[in-house]
Length: 113
Length: 108
Image (cartoon, rainbow over all chains, first blue to last red):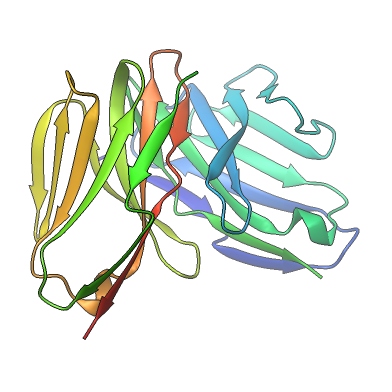
């Protein structure tokens, strides 16, 4: 079946630095990928929709200048958390769309210290 | 408003018990996913359903499109099944909404 690989699975970074998270569709082309965030003890919430070759669409309340999304190819979308702060510590997960289905990455646990 | 609900919120079972987790949603969908989230946060996709029933090992997932309801069953539960189980629903407008999750603890 279709596989979505997310990397890294865990990352610890210092406050003020930037972190890039990759989401790859391994055996299919995904024109649309989604990025989600999960706060402690809460459900996953959509951050943005990433379309190949165009600008991402951000959900209300998500800072597009802080969470940079790039979908430069049909198999790769990246989320860069810029100038990370401790409040950005969270669980981030991507999904890639293939037809009527969506496939999920394994998620990335980001800790900003 | 499109919503996804899950029940129960928390579940403690004895090893070997048959477990059912329920998911209900408000409007028509394209597909429904069952996800397993481990304590460290990692997500594993268990099932993707648009109709009927799927089985994988001790896990069974069913969906009733007319009733807008899905169930995840675990037979012969084991402590390693302890995790949070999340129902994720993809609506016709092409976005996925996640349920609040069911925290399962299986005691030896």
